[in-house]
Image (cartoon, rainbow, N blue to C red; front, side, top):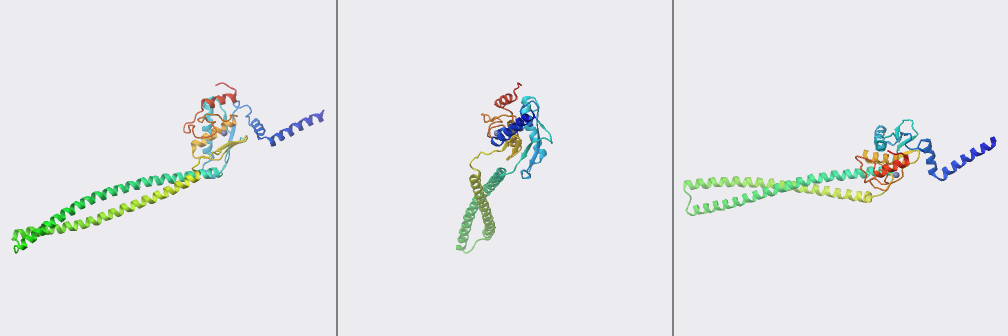
Length: 311
Ligand SMILES: [Zn+2]
């Protein structure tokens, strides 16, 4: 009798490990059982925050806060506690740093650089246009004054020639011409000063144009780098639910991290991928409402299915 029982026990053990090695899914479901996931919704899935690589630059407290928000997405709809934080829980949310986050950080850095260059370009262009319009206005005034100067100088010389041909000018005419001569000298000095100022303005405008061109070169080469490295959209896993917990590999900000955790929470409940791109359980992130995430009808009905409940 004893022998028989022992044999049966051994048999179960072997088949368990056998399936574990051959098929991960079986392993998952055994962990689901341990974690109380075989009956989703009957008791909350207890989770803790596990390994968090410092390179993500986010604290465990922040991850917990975001995880609690991700819980709420499912819990608000079902009106029951589906997930619960327990620092001792075996089911862990880990942040694993690899080339996915590295490349995402690199892309963000380049995006920021492009944005800054774009802003710098706009302000430089504005500065250039302002200088150019100042230059054009001053040059026009200058040319008008030069024309006036030349006309008056011609007139003055004509008068001088006239009076000289008569052997000299009377006292009052002489004084008038002397005054005009001084005025013309002053005007000449003014024009010379203005000419230099306008040239300096042109120089400044040209330097600004050069600066703008350098910004454009930098922008174009950064854009080229960005396109060659990140131009083609690629699909990668931002996170996975592996049966024992959740691993997060990449996020940009709070919103997409929350969406990723909510998605993996959904898998932990036993929900598979759904068809609508706006659903939390769609396999790609992009069309969901990241700022204000809510379950779609499809998500809700999948939740009802796995929970075998009505709400
Ligand atoms: Zn998924």
